[in-house]
Length: 451
Image (cartoon, rainbow, N blue to C red; front, side):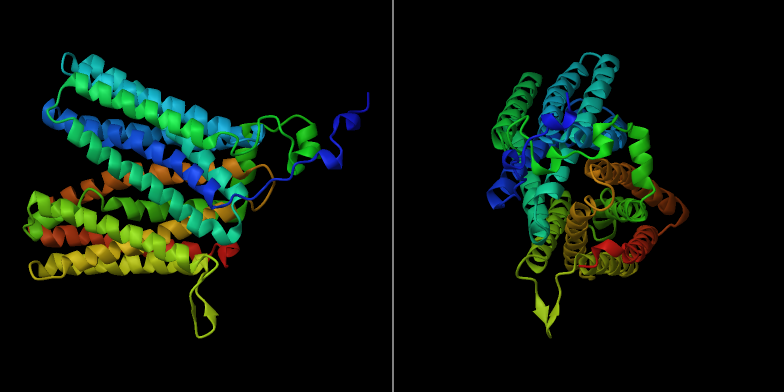
């Protein structure tokens, strides 16, 4: 029988529809649920281990680093969605793994009260599952956005999805913290189960037929290329093909360098404010909140500037993603140089303003980078979007895992070598500023994000 007879006729084709705002919000709900489960494991359980169980802070640090290390598998997850031609099963499967890992992590934390060894081993398995779940779900959400969101909506779409994820982080952390008081292991397990079950339910409901009914044939799938008619290429071959694409390789290096600079100050900003500016714990927490407010401001600014209503000054369009990436990296470098100066000046320096502007700059470059990633995912050989996004996600995860460790280690080293703590921290901030300048230079070489 002729194989052509099995192909659908043209009037049977169902063209791929671009996502509207409601569909984007539905995907954002999946990210919100992802953030809700993750924050309970990386923040709340961290506190329980250190405070209630009086365990070394190194233990949760290793577990969080493990969940980042596992995310090196992101390219393989993206490849899976490429070969399947659908992202929804990977998002739902990833969320299921994540929810199960979250409950297992809470169980492991409770078990540590009786046996640190067995609780720690179970926690390692749980955080590995969390890393796998985040890899499958988070990567596939971005791939689906890249495939189905029109170019002029990408910055706004990225902002909406990330704002919803941050909302999930913030609300869950606040509610879980309130409900955990007074602490008990049973209460911790109950809260974890409720959050995981709610996250799964909302995600399944939000994604129901969002991508189209399973098995439906779209116009992009109806007339397969010779590659899809023959044996599908293996993961190693596909990853090699993507890595050989100059733009994909440049963007991978940019993501790693910029996110390394972005994350390196996470663990040192509050200790810096406490030691040099004599902030109380409450004041340093407020300072972090001010930085996050700046990040949200920067994200929203880019969403408006790069959408249909791009800012125009003197007849020139200021909605270029590359402009915002490069400008955001340079502005982040300037803000870090200002923090460097504050280490020498000390009391009286406008630290809060500097930290807010650092947040705005970070938010601007990061959301522009995500929108650019959605654009670059479709550049080059077809059916490689997931592998590209996975590669960039792995670079980000490695940078985040290494950034906090390097920043904290560097601050400890400089404080050992330099007696004045302000000057010691200033040296680290200066190094981060240089990294952002390198990232800006790398972004200038990525030619496909001109517009």
